[in-house]
Amino acid sequence: MVTQLQVVAREWLTPHLVRLTFSAPDGGSLADFPMNDCADAYVKLELPPRGVVLDLPYDVEQVRATRPAHEWPVRRTYTIRRFDPAGDRLTMDFVVHGDDGVAGPWARDVVPHGPTSNVLVYGPGGGYSPDLDADHHLLVGDASALPAIAVALERLPVGASADVVLGVEDSGHEIPLTTDAAVRVRWIHAACAETGIGEAIEAAVRALELPDGDVHVFVHGEAGWVKALRSHLRFDRGLTREKLSISGYWRLGANDEQWREGKRAWNEAVEAEEQARAS
Image 1 (tube, rainbow, N blue to C red):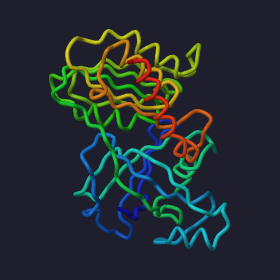
Image 2: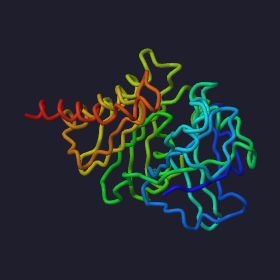
Image 3: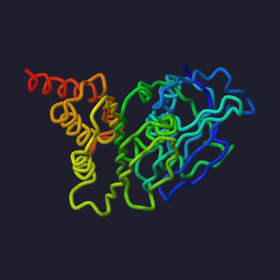
Image 4: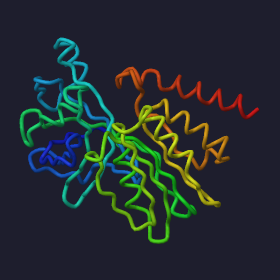
């Protein structure tokens, strides 16, 4: 489903994390927005390049036929942090690293109700929610997975337990996490990591003493270290695939289009390696 949204508010959570609040344009309603129950519910935003204003609604094929390529909208995938159907509000968090990328600079510069505040979104999709019957939860991610992990923690009830490992740039990029569960949170800072942030996240997970019983796992972030942890959790920890939600949100050295084009082949190669190891 395609939905037209407008940015109506902006809030900086950290120096590099901005929260945008969206609503339907012109005071409209989001009553028909098909929100799902997934903790990692996401949409694909169609964003205008910097300095380009596209009148909504528009036909993508017509835009491509009538405008130069540098004015074509681009799609980026973002987790829905919160959806309030009664208030007709939807929020998403965006990581901003200077002028790098498309979505970050747009989120940094967009003026609520301004000329570039209107966007089209596709979805939502999603596939993970914490198993409330599990004995323990393991939630691991970098900044790209922080919104989904925050949603998952909010859903854990009193009596649940979880280990959380989160990799961010430094302490200034940490955000408060709300939960009723008994949670141990380990923040990994890239600025202090002797190796890369991915290796530091992997080492922190390997060092965890997970309790016996049914452990439900969510691991998302950069594809390289996610792959390493997937192998560790399956073969060293003995967790079954059914208990794991593991995927690379992005890949170092590839932009979003390149990663989307190659993600299926990447996943198939990972599956083949695991099958060979298991045989």
